[in-house]
Image (cartoon, rainbow, N blue to C red):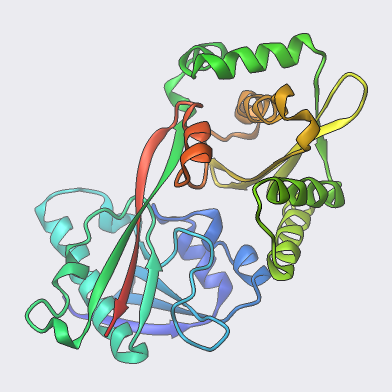
Length: 318
């Protein structure tokens, strides 16, 4: 293959390529990247006039290319490269990744990606400097998320039967108790509930993360790129709030936050299941729970019967 690598910071060109890529996801959409107020270098890998892949390098505050903006970033293939998963296609993808690695390590010295779950063949990273690892090598960290494919179910009732029984019981109890779901744009309320959730877990949000979450929520809601959903009890008190981002045919569960005094009422379960119930109206057939890597939180997200899906962080270090 005669590959070329060209740098560009054209967000429109970036979005246009990602729109047809199997690795396209909300976390690499330009609107979300811009809100992070970081520096990104976009690379387009071509053979002749055809762009076969792209790569994104994200800089941290010190200018080092080791920053991970959310998850699922790094390398993205043209869908035509992945049309047929035969031996020649597999080899072609390895050659493209090898080329990207060689060029970016040469330019930056250090690189770090959080790869999309569809990229499972990591041999190109393993093989880099295979016989001279004192010159640097890639390190790997495995993460997991849960992805629910709603197209597998004929309707919501069939899906509801598939989930863990305790979730069904919580959902039905919320209905009996007169809980109500509302679409909201009250970012301040989401922020307050999010703060309560962190305090309950003995954690503290830094000012940057707090501001970023509020900006993401505001932009997504104003531009129909997501929904903030709240759950109220029959007295009208807000018990919980969730933020979901939309990209193509997938909803991403970004934030779930509950007032401590209402945790036993299971309002977040009601929000998630009502959201799933209504996704078909939005032409969305998948939901990504965005990580199941902590014991309790991960088990809770898995109880909605999504598929356990690995994704990998890869980092080159000398």
